[in-house]
Image 1 (cartoon, helix red, strand yellow):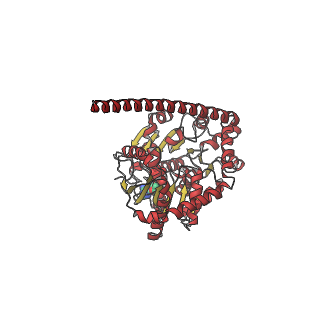
Image 2: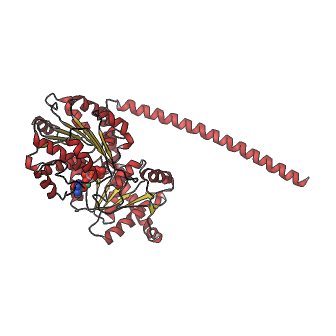
Image 3: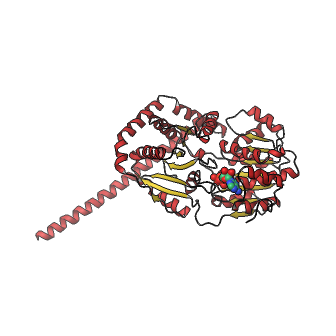
Length: 472
Ligand SMILES: Nc1ncnc2c1ncn2[C@@H]1O[C@H](COP(=O)(O)OP(=O)(O)OP(=O)(O)O)[C@@H](O)[C@H]1O
């Protein structure tokens, strides 16, 4: 196996790696770093927690030490928390160089960011929306000397999910020099490979780990089949069990919506679990503060939406619980990848209702892994069922008395305005669409009823004929 020096890193950088416990290159580092140092575009697809960040940070820092000027490298990433984590790696590994970074993310002071950007940092780590805002609104930002463009979690940046980055990416890509190295990384790159290849134009070096499975072997993947109404009781039971048995374990719980995330946090607190939350309806400062407290193990339970599912590297996370079964296999891969990182063990437990069985099948097919049932003594869960459900309802009522839903509406309107849409017109369109859907449903129901009636009539006829034949 190669060492970092033989891959082309200077002695001082190898020393710097050692200080971080990075002694031997992981496969993604061993394979991608030489190509990047040679000047090639690169696409690296490797499992969660396999060291993809250092696979691009190290060659950039090496190159920067050889020829530093202007804003040298731009990293784009889908979430604000991830931007801070990546910047931290640049800062630590590039410390002997006096590397200067600038973080450009939404929810933080735009004026200050603007000033930092004009101060020509070596590395800019940004979320696409905020950086595109700076580019559109200011003529002082210069990025014409960029040597590296890096898209971390590249497939997420390009997919058209609930946050659509495509317009912002267009603005940013149009602003960058064509002559540059482009590096794309993710644990689920293959799903959008073609679109990604169009961004990395110079015949990119593509490296993909050869393993058949898409999740790490150190991860024990489990499921619990439960009716919807018993889900929360299972959740409380699991957390009680893990916190009783392992006082140094941290637990991440993923939920489908911000509201669910908030209610579950309130509920778990009622049961005296030290719980905090992370979702997009929180103020950014609160998001950072909560994540810092969770990382420092001040709080051992974090309830989060998918905003925390990608990239976050928190070594103490030993358990991931999916309160809802993720609709897409790749979301599952990233969520459960928050544990069992860098060779450590971890457990994931997905709560599955009868309606989610096909989702589990597609997760199993996609990851090439079979989820095993997690054994639970059912009567222990049933014992707490009423108490859990009553507590949840109380928390829901408490939340309804706040302006949580109102804030959601305001945020939605803000988002639509930012996208150049008229919120009232959109609401009208949505209502019309719902009306049409309702009519369609009614019509389908009518057809179904008629078919049922006809079948019933035919059956009756048959039975009558049978009875008549018998008596004859
Ligand atoms: N060569 C190495 N040896 C030991 N540890 C390493 C090495 N490279 C990176 N690490 C550590 O492994 C952990 C996971 O790395 P990283 O966050 O880069 O994973 P990733 O592949 O980007 O995962 P994800 O797909 O979830 O974003 C980090 O704590 C990092 O410091």
